[in-house]
Length: 425
Ligand SMILES: Cc1ncc(COP(=O)(O)O)c(C=O)c1O
Image (tube, rainbow, N blue to C red; front, side, top):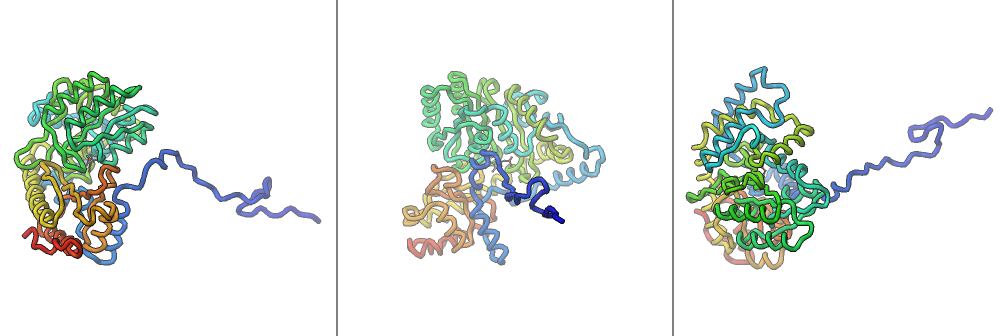
């Protein structure tokens, strides 16, 4: 008696051929996204910490202080309210949007309609990325500053747009390069991203800069997104200007702000997009499909933070200023070239010879981590314009910064002969 072979796990009665291993075929856009800047540095950092080593982490701009008690208490109270656990409004609750509008008026003299010109986002990065989806079509071009915060580049890439990077070092040159690009490109760029105080370079601008941005936007017809993540972290009496305070800004663009940095609420994911009503509405449409907004208890606590903790935000900025002074002093004694940042959470530093001529910023960062137990961000993680630099976040306390300087100095001193100077004391 003949019998057909019994089906096995990798064949069927209809097709006795063994099935090939299944291949996941992801979208091409995944291949356009490189590993995140800090991935290699972070992998080694975690390995070292797992092995019990004490690593001083100046890599990520992740605030180490908590928000004010009154904010945490409000969160707990709001979390106990059964009314706060359903889906919230994708745009954010109106009282929070009103509070954001009130802050803009108080701080910058900017009038915003909380109904149509303010939207709450899940951190400003989510808002920025979704705004790029709303604003950019396939093959359209955006201009961003170089070096760049990775989300500025890759949110546009994910929206299938093209990116032109323009050097951020000199703000006047930046503007003339924007004009030149618009004059010589067909079709013209559709979007300009500005980011001051800038991450990673800490460059800042004065209000007149935005007056020119608005003029160029009108002349060449591009929209503007201002990423104002470090609005609340400034030093020596400097107040970073808001793009929205420039005459006509609301007609051409929007601005993103966040509670991550100044308010020490990075993990809470609260940000805002304000300005042009049509762009705000478009972001709301995209968000309506992707998310249901932010946990309502967080939004209620964010109102308290905005209303009652301005003094703490200023105190936090002073803390960063003291750390900046200590770190700059120590780095300069070791032969680093660093400009004094007027705002932001970072020192953007050109590392010294002979390392500058011999090691890439990634190799230099790995060396600092391997030999000095200090994690820094390699400049190349912010694009080719960042090569030769590293970024150090001011997120460790002064004692830890002194320790970092001593440890880096020891490693650098092996060849430069300068690193063993007593620093930061
Ligand atoms: C320039 C810039 N924009 C946006 C963000 C992200 O902020 P959020 O936590 O609000 O998403 C950061 C955080 O590092 C940043 O440096």
